[in-house]
Image (cartoon, rainbow, N blue to C red; front, side):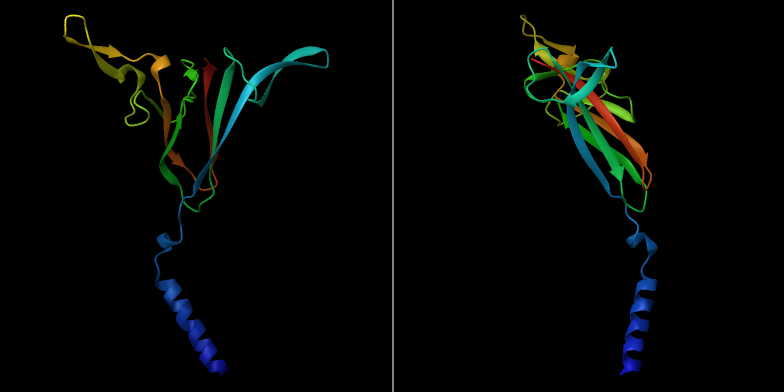
Length: 165
């Protein structure tokens, strides 16, 4: 009996050794998101800004969205895409998105993404002719970052701000 168990173990070991290492190594990127706002507080007699959870926000207030990413896999993750919609009832604040990787935006609810200067749409003028316009930041519906590589065990964050309408 002992011999059969050893033989079975040896067969299993050989089968595992025959599998390519790539089958075991994989990237595993997870993303978490925080919505915060800055408030002024007094600490040690000085007024300082502090980030707190964005609860009970009012029109005109700014919300900071931070998307933290971690690659807990055993291999580098390549061309990691992180995308987040601009929430309804808010407006993207120009220039507030972190410049990590390739930053692009959408004006069609995430169907297509382009750099700001290439985000265009057509409108019909009073004469019936179509006119091409460049989208303004208040028309952005989504923000997207493409990060070339996140190493195994690597982590980082991207963020953007919106103003509550």
